[in-house]
Every structure is written in structure tokens, then in C-alpha cells.
Length: 127
Image (tube, rainbow, N blue to C red):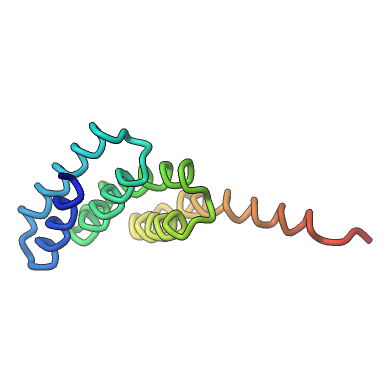
């Protein structure tokens, strides 16, 4: 039931039916959270979509909270290098920059960069 609701929410959003879209996103999120749990990739999908809707509506703080929840789930379930995780991280950074939270935006990127730099360093030949 939640999959069609999320799709309908996206369609309503595209058609400019924002009140309807918001209601559908909320219902889809509620159903997925109840049935699948908060740490499921499908729940993170709705959170990410709903966050995008919030951002477009000018509700940047709400978008940041939802993107952070989606990112936490995707990092845990899919891993830090999965494309969906990377996409959510980039959108969260964009929202944080829009909020003027530059240090927080850098922190969101930093753990991934540090892991990558550590891995690269471990692969470098010793002199």
C-alpha cells in the first residue's frame, strides 16, 4: 500500500497538488515505518522523497531532518558508498548550506572523505 502512495505523492507534487502530496507522503512514511521499521531502505526512500518535497516547499529545516534520517538509514543498511547513500548525502549537504550551516555540511561529508583517504593511504606503497 505504501509503494503506490509514495508514487501518488510524487505525481501530486509534479501536478502542483502540494497539500495532497504532503498528505500522501505522510501516510506512506507512516505505513512503511509501521510495517518495515525505521531502518529499512524503503522507509529511507520515502524520507528522501518527502525531504525533497519539504525543500522545494521552502521548509529547509524539516528537509534537513528528514534527509539526515534517510542518510543514517542508508549508511547503515546500504553502506556509505552506495549510490543512494551518496545522493542523500549530497542533498543533505545542499540543504545544510542553504541553512547557512557550513560546518555541519562539512561534517556530513567529512566521515566519508576521511574513510576514503584512509583507504587510499593504506593502498599506497611504503617508501
